[in-house]
Image: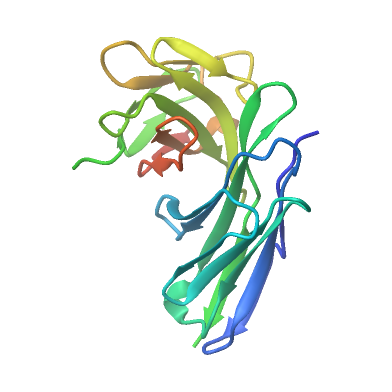
Length: 113
Length: 112
């Protein structure tokens, strides 16, 4: 069964704290891993595209790493701010014959002021 | 530089009616995806289409639901004889092959 899993499901942190969460994906026949940010009442927006083992991408205070051999990616937020509150989704192309694009269930982050 | 457009943004239907949801992809994108978000749940994949072709409809209920992406015009998700359980937000996304997806604003369907 092809599955993309994220943990934790939800997270509350204080403003200024740094935090990270995990995305696990099928490592065989890896093609790409994408991170999205999804604010309440809006639609998901792409954050990062990660394709190479060891990739590290950064956008402001948010960064992500990729390990394709073991099938995981970490998303880090440094010095969390209330505006970082959102659901963070990862998605991966995975195959059991034909490629499918599979979203994880997301990590819901709430940053408390 | 228009992104993915969806209409209507809100749709109210009575049980038994039909719902038609439209999605215009980003110009130049040949791949369209439909997702459903049920209350308090994440995104659930429904169907993946290219122009005039359904590539993967494994997430779409076998009955009452259909999708198309014609050569000209928007992609349409059609729900016949809606039931209360169909109430959800329906998101469309488009992409180039293998690339990240650009999401539309969603259509919120409410079935009375």
